[in-house]
Amino acid sequence: MAIDFKAAFKYQLILNKLTNQFSYTDNIEGKHFAYNEITPNFDWKMKNESKEILGYQTKKATVEYGGRNWTAWYAEEIPIQFGPYKFNGLPGLILEIYDEKNHYHFTVKAINQDPQQIYLAKTNKDEILVSKAEFMTAEKNYYANAAVRLSGQAIDANGKPIIGKEMPYNPIELK
Image (cartoon, rainbow, N blue to C red; front, top):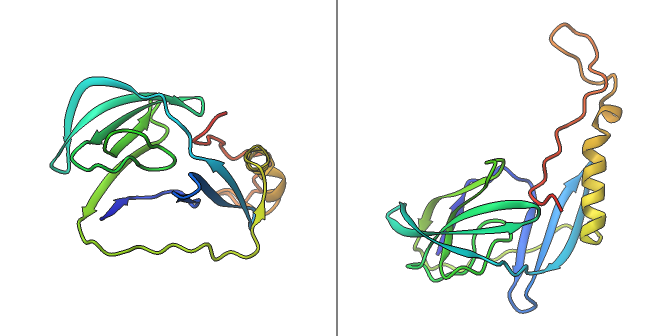
């Protein structure tokens, strides 16, 4: 079964079910950083609401994770306890999940019942293994220092240099 979530993210997240760890890899300023993390345990609160997504009857659950409040819709008909990003632990596949401010919203676009094996391989030999805290600091610094990196390199519609612009920083996990 292949699940298609339209991705607007550049990170790679792979779950090793044998070690119960996620391997997270992302590019910051041309360098590939990676960290490993034990699969989070989520304290889901089940709600008495349902809706249909892609022909599947889904149920609602909420959770606080990473400094955000999330709402998930999962299909018990698909007994896979995972979803997008690191979300897991519900009694069915998460077909939709979003934070309360709708800064992040994942919705499944298609489910393919083709039983082909999918092989994933980490191919970046130059990745820098760091702790999760070190990664988050590096990412925050990257966004905070965007103006310095771009100083004099970017111009506005009138041909004037753009100086002092900070890139918006809004990570999935705030803490």
